[in-house]
Image (cartoon, rainbow over all chains, first blue to last red):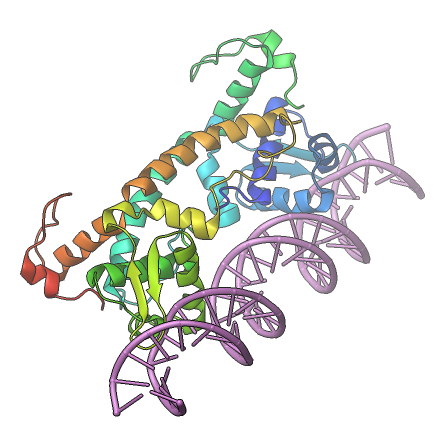
Length: 161
Length: 161
DNA sequence: CCAAACTGATACTATCTTGATATCAATTAA
DNA sequence: TTAATTGATATCAAGATAGTATCAGTTTGG
């Protein structure tokens, strides 16, 4: 049972990199190199995020990508939905007006409950939160609470690797 | 994001059928027919469950399968582990002594936390619990609490479809 | 004893999803 | 004007999931 596919994984890490340098355009190439991701594959991921208004882009020399919104408003849950589709139980679910099979429906009911738990958890994880965890870890200081501004030192430490 | 694969789904429903007729052997064929599952595929699933001591079998005429333990001791979590492997985050995790990439590790940390939540939930769902939900639903009475014995009427209603 | 109803074991194929690559046109800054 | 870039697709490879087929061994009832 794999929680995150490559696409989601790459997406999150790319966003973290963009989030660490807000305000400037960062090229797909530099992300791919620094994060060790396949270039063209990453580009597909980035384009998908543009379509969902998570990032914006600029073409041409010195072009690249930039966050389109506050990091605290980009939720891992949404990324999972974009790249892996809504959580669903086996089949049954859609169409098939009311399950033909009771045992499957009972099972489904249980799983939908669990799905909700999972979704709530992923809803709480934002790019902003991850960024704070990163910088906190970066210089071995306690994690910042939500809303608290990280100190400049931590800021410039750089995020990746 | 698919929570249950066919194998797990079939496994659970087969177990529910066995659980509904504890004490007698039920053939793979009858399960396949009643539950509308591909016969040979189901057989593979059943054999896997034998290897994990969830069920036992009897060969030959009048043979079939039977639960090997109390339904309340068969957990959906274990079934998921058997048929879908342990929950894991992207890659990273195994080998690769300590992630080379900090952002991936921070992410991983968050996801491992969520995984634990999921595992706890699936740990709580047993075949016994599902059986009780089924019989409760079967005749529109409130669900039984854990440990409470279902009444005979409910019992004989039959489980499937 | 034998035939039919079964499981054990395994090999194979098909289909779907995920991951990755390649190409070409359009844009932009130096 | 050219090199660095994104936009848009098309294609391919690899892996996971789903499903089929086959044959040998076991058991029971007639």
